[in-house]
Image 1 (cartoon, rainbow, N blue to C red):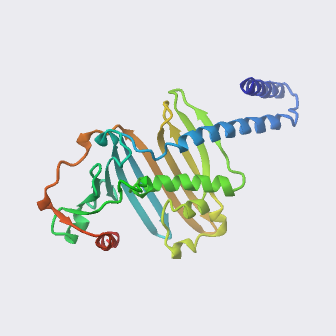
Image 2 (cartoon, rainbow, N blue to C red; image 1 turned 30 degrees about the vertical axis):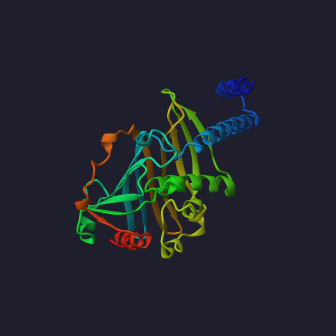
Image 3 (cartoon, rainbow, N blue to C red; image 1 turned 180 degrees about the vertical axis):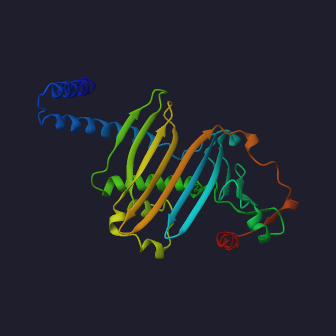
Length: 301
């Protein structure tokens, strides 16, 4: 019944346009049709997003890539991360799967920091790129895992952490902001595109990108209230395919550029992970305190 109603509304709008070409005046009721169509699409958006929300970060045999860019006041932060999940490594058991993340500034640089978590292991193994090689006498450093069997949180994993933050920013915006647009589009290949926006305020509070306090203080309120266009693509089978947040915000003489893109690139397999690592190639850190000290040094580079 709802679909028939929408079809009738679209037909009515088309008839009004034809009449306008013949010198007839379009009645104000045509605007109500636009409101009906917008409400219908918002409902479809909410329904599709609710289903997607359940599996945003669910581990699966999957490869994906996320790139982030933030530029403001002459400062720029850029990062790319490849993320590989392999649930089949533990035959689908609930404990964390094998996880391999490859972080860098860009593919053209040699500043990679790759982290490998073997399925079920109590340790993570970090491969040091050229920027970090002097932090250890071996190519690899190991430390207590961020993916323990008990209390595992996918949002603690590099790259996935940003996807979780994007999700939080969407929810914060739809909860707190006024006039949030929602669009639902079905594509010819069976995929679906969901379009909405997040406020810069929600983007910052959700920590999609981290902005130091001295930079955040420079964002005028008009910029904080501005929307960042957000697009989510859902594959024909209902799985997340990609999510992007892109904007160039200019308010009161200030300009902020944001470009975030997450994309699922394929299905993972055992060959996507490092071969067994020799103990001779690993510097082992025994405690979480030692891990924190080491990672603070990595972050300072």
